[in-house]
Image (tube, rainbow, N blue to C red):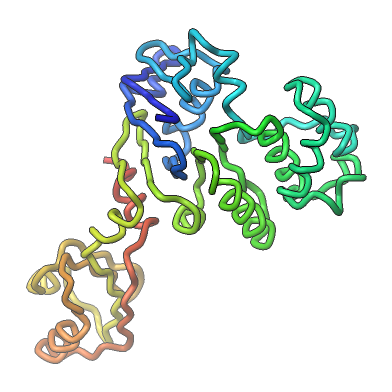
Length: 300
């Protein structure tokens, strides 16, 4: 296994950030690590990269224990933290040369990562002159410099505009062909575009761990937005078959969730006619990863 986590727990005072978390990641997988703010994502990534120690449990990267073999772990991991730390007064090549000396890698590797991350046109500039998107590329180039087997990326596309997001996403997907990638993000489309597997954490516990295609295939619920021409009661809606939840979003518009593979729009049309109503709009809204995320991390 590239990453092995067994019963990891970590507390900050009375706050339990991680509560007996366990999972493993195979070599070559691209795994999306999802969760709301404060769920424990960054804490676990810091443990895997040896920045902090767990209170309980064990973790290893490429077979190296993160507590007992920290140097070996650091050499096998490329880490891009959420707040990408860069020396803004250094030129891009100068900064990469500095890190190449730290990792004791050949200077020829600098040109390779510049090409790989699309930094060629900006490599002559100071980092402080770069856009947010190119600064993220510098951070990613640094993480790749020593050619690690495992990439751990914490919110790699935070603050990027749509064009920059697509560019960085493509870079990650490209380098992920030959490496294990473990990435945290709040952008569901990013996970759907890049990842093979999804792990969702909430309140320090794993609540979902499945292959992305399997997770999507299990979605049988459908959400329909319907607007009636007059007000109705929630009690009347409960007569609809396979209805699992309903929400009055505004005025006479309702968001209805059905647990069935049958398209319920025709049933809603019949329902309206039978109750002396007219449907002013009837829209099928697909249930996607974002919906699953909200369900798994909703406050109870």
